[in-house]
Image (cartoon, rainbow, N blue to C red; front, side, top):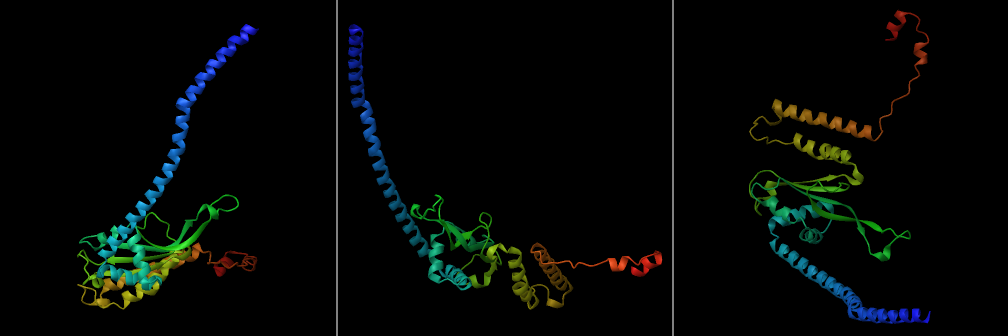
Length: 273
């Protein structure tokens, strides 16, 4: 037994020495750099944020320097329509990732439309504002932003600019070549917003319009009259659809027993008909 444990003791001592050597030689050197790497990563992350903030600031100032009379026209229309200051609108535009869309809109044969959404956007706050169940506290906040109109849900106000030709947009012709309008779909009521836009803005403007280009007779022309009739008919269909969706059409319950219990022969049916 003594010999057995002696051998094991010697073996254990040797293994212990080997493990100690291995630990101090490799494991420890593996552990220490890990802590160092975490600290270094935090420093790099902080530096990256500072560098990104610096680049963002430079980008904003470059865009601010590009603003001319064309941009000022857009900014003033947006500020008036959405009830924001021109400074707020300018800051929003130069900070937007889609700023390039404005230049594409101004270019000859450029984009036909330029869309802005102004609506509630959920913004996640810091960990300090987590809910008791651990979920994030997302608070809605209104934001103005450029959009192509195909990726974001439309739940608020859409401000749009439309080109009337393929001419290059300049500071001198922007007010003639670009039309501005707004489309209010607050709470997602798109049909109601479209109905209001057409009935209160577009149709009255069309019916009071005198210059119809090559059509010299203007509103007296039969094709113009047919067009306006079609628009009015579309408005009626739109209004009916909206009311159907909102369950505002109530069918009156009719007591037909009064009419059918006295029907005895075919002549009675004919009379009732």
